[in-house]
Length: 510
Image (cartoon, rainbow, N blue to C red; front, side, top):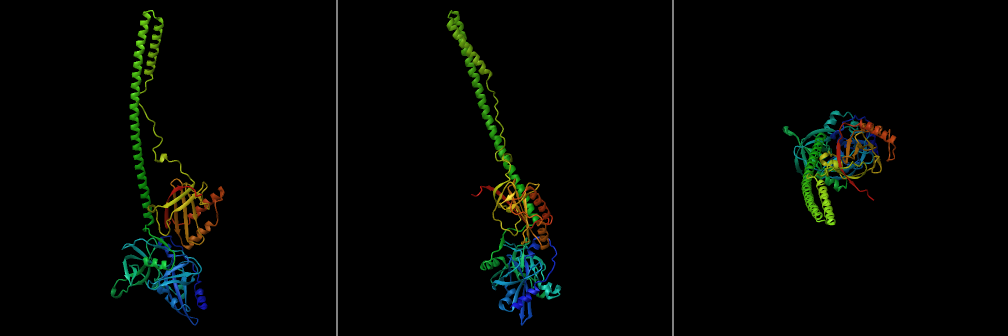
C-alpha cells in the first residue's frame, strides 16, 4: 500500500502554470471541480487507471459517483485514490468517507490542501432552464492527453451547455434529464445553473444508437442532500432564483425607484393632510378672531353709552348745584368713554393666521442628520441583491466615528462617504468588498470569486499595508485607502455576488 501511495504522490506532484480566467460564475464554480483518479497496482506494477469528476462541497471534501471510486472500495490494498484540482501545481491523495451505491454517490476527503467549495441550489428548477455540465470527459482526454501525467495534471474542467428537460425516477432515484453533452469521465461532476450553483451530479448518458439524440442523467440535489445528511456533512445551500448581474442591477434600480415613488407619495399625502389641518386651524382661528373683534366692539359700545349717560347725569347734577355728584358722574362717564375708545382702537383683526410648521412630520426634512456611528442589525434585501453562494442571515454591524467595525476591523472612508474595507484572505479564493453607508443605513457585501493568478496579485497588493485591529492613525488610514484602491484595480469590473442589507439601529448590548 505504501508503494502505491508513493507512486501516486509522485504522479500527483506535476507542475503547471494555470492561465488567468474571467471571474464569471461558471469559471468560479469550475475551480471547485476536481478530477478523481484511481490507480490499481499489482506486484509493484500499475495495472489499471481510472478517473471521473467531482465537486468540492467543503474545503476538504468532494462529492463524486460511487461507481467512480468502487475499485478503491473493493480493493483498498491495491487501489489508491487521488484528487486533482482544477488549478494549482499539485494534487492530493484522498480517502473514502461515505458511499451510497443505490444513489451512486460517494464522499471523499483530502488530507492536505484546500479547495473552494461550491454551493448547492435548493430552489425550484423549471423545465427548459439553462444548465452547464462540468467535468473531465474521457473523449477529450483521448484527444489531448499525450502521457499518463496529463491525467493527473491540474487543468480547467470542460464545460458543456444544455437545458434541463424534466425530473424522472430511475431505479427509485430522482434524476434530472438534460441535454448538456457529457461522456465517460464526467461521472461525478456537477450540473450547475447559470449562477454556478449545483443542481445535480452527472451520472449516466443514454445510448445514441440509430441516430437517436443522446440525453444525460444527473442525480437530483434532493438525493444529494439526503446523502450528505446521512453522512453528517454540512454544505452551503442557496434557494434564490438565478439572476444575471445586469438583471440584479435593474431590479435594484426598480426597487429603489419604487421606494422613492412610495416615499414621494407618502410625503405628498402628509403634506396634504398638514395643509388641510392648517386650513381648519386657520378657519377656526379666523372665526374666533371675528367673534373676539365683535365682542370687543360691542363692549366698547356699551361702555361708551354708559359713559355718555354718566356724563349727562353729571351735567344734570351740575345744573342742580350738586357739584360733588356732578364731578363723580362726570368723571365716571369720562373714564368709561375713554375705556370704550381704548377697547375700540385695540379691537383684534378679523383675519387670523397660524404659523407654518417647520417640517412635515415623517418627511426627509423632519429627519435629523445621519449618525455615522452606532450599533446596527442589518437584514438582507433580496430584491436588491444577487445571491449565489452565501448565507443571508442578519449581520450585526457596530461602527464608531473612525470606521472601526465590530471592534476588530478598520474601514476607510471613501469620497462618497461610505466606509469600506476590501478583505483578501490567505487561503480562500474570494475577495470581499464590505461597505457601510451611514446616510442610507445600508450595509453591502460584494464577493469576487477569483482564479489563482488574480488572487496572488490581490494578496501581493494587500501585503504592502496590513492594518490589524482598529488602532490606526490618520496616516495609516490614508495608506489603507490607497491600498484598497490598488486592490480594487486588480478586480474584475463586476462581482459574482452582491448582498445588500438594510440596517436598523439597536441599543448596545450590555
